[in-house]
Amino acid sequence: MAPSALPSRTFYRHSLPSAASPPSREACAPCCCLPGAVSRRRAASQLLSAGFLAAVSPPPASLAARRGRRVVPPEDYVTAPDGLKYYDLVEGKGATAEKGLTVQVHFDCIYRSITAVSSREAKLLAGNRSIAQPYEFTVGSPPGKERKREFVDSANGLYSAQASPKPPPAMYTITEGMKVGGKRRVIVPPELGYGKRGMSEIPPDAHFELDIELLEVVPPAEK
Image 1 (cartoon, rainbow, N blue to C red):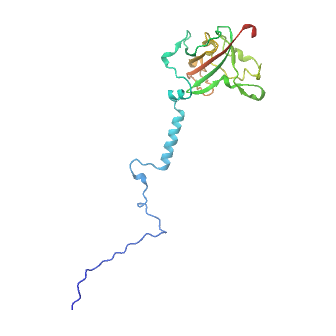
Image 2 (image 1 turned 180 degrees about the vertical axis):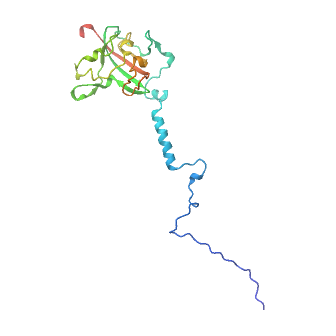
Image 3 (image 1 turned 120 degrees about the vertical axis):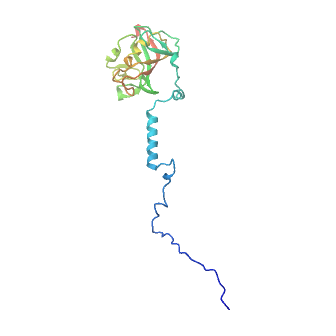
């Protein structure tokens, strides 16, 4: 009897990858070959760049509102005779600051929502401590005249007028007409601010906001 014809079978040998052999470059092609994908190094560089730009970019107006500062529209400012633009945040009800009178104020110079110069960081000689020492000057006087005093004896200790924060020249004139308890915001141009030298975080030739709070009008007999 003739043997039955069986279908022939062909066997193929497939080599398995060895555990010791490294995978091929084609098998482990990174996903950066896909459209829009980036490497880790490039992604980190982009994140750092974005963070740097966010740090140096001016904050939006909404940021000042979230920090509790009132945002005043430019058209609401009043122009003084010397050209300074100001807005009364709070109308005072006390004595009026007139030219030639000595006043005590707190002031804050704000540049891009950053308080760069403030009387609330005045210095004391004892231990060089910082306190909220009011700034005292004469309305309409030449800027800086009161800073020639070596020190003033205050309730908090020996206060250094020379080491205290330096106000911009605009403050000596724009305070006139304010009443005790009032708060005024001023747009200070470079020529009445810190000029070409700048001050602290305020760069040269920069506009900034000046917030003034009138605390007291000193009677002539008490000076």
